[in-house]
Length: 168
Image (cartoon, rainbow, N blue to C red; front, side, top):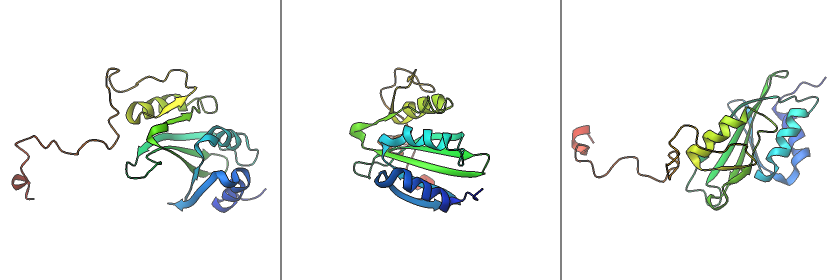
């Protein structure tokens, strides 16, 4: 049996994805890859079912907003773990704000259900095929997504927030 490390994992991913693997790096000992968002389900299924890799545990699924990255403003990030091989993988799927849709991973990893709802709630990313994509933590009548970086960090209209009071 081959020892599975980040280099071996990257070789398998490059062979599987080819040109759909856009970028890779190792951060804090974890292989991070950026892939074509339309390949997310194919890759997640491959990693889960691969006889040797056995990436059967989705540790986390989350979103992020980078308003300064043209045509890559939103991202869905998957964190997978192979308990058998004790190796982790981070998968990033970027998308433009104008097309904030990605396929749902609920059929591959049922635990993605709640995490996709949370990501939709806070970032507005829609998960195509999700069985119940509604807000989970915020009020249903909210018209915005609070973790997007679209709003100023401080309320400029407040009178009690003068810089002189805070040593600035």
